[in-house]
Length: 236
Ligand SMILES: [Zn+2]
Image 1: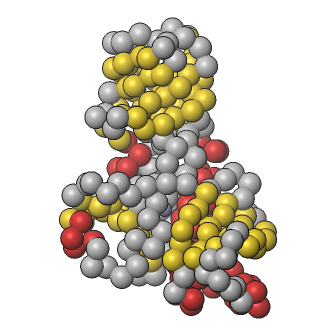
Image 2: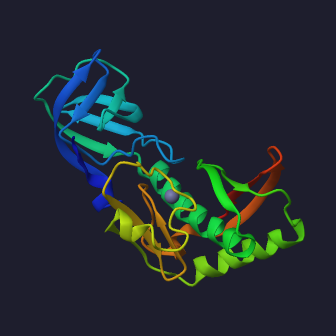
């Protein structure tokens, strides 16, 4: 397995690495990577891998057989190449703000309704969260958004750390969103937003909730009998 740099430092935008494997000329594994692979509802990072003056655009990143694999737009990278890697920071930072926002909003709704979160998909323009509930009190929606924005404005610290699985599962609501939660690992990565929310999570988050800006409701959809979907966006 390659070193996963974004788990330690989600603000790392550039890094040097060595090419470990190349499949079909375009699927590149490095000895380490800060590129986030498509998983847990958070889209992949884009960016550039440079070898001297040669540029290889990263168009998709996935996790295969435990390794982060970077799909590049042109062939040419070889095993052993030393490369400089650059994350498309605007894209990634928006997704980090969206991800922390999704945790806050899902927790606000969960705390009031007890509804579990059955899915989520972050996007650059808007994100969505699916709640396992039959009815949604629409009059409460603006309260939920207000509450989420109050938490954002109170500028809580966001921290990540590891806990043994058995210990983590004792925490209330630690798996209500359950982004990118491999069932087999012994130590769970926990993302904690102040004292407000604690969830098991493998994604990238901002350090302070004030970085999110402000949340706005886009719409609510009924997606089947027990599925209510909330769309939100960031307004600053
Ligand atoms: Zn998450």
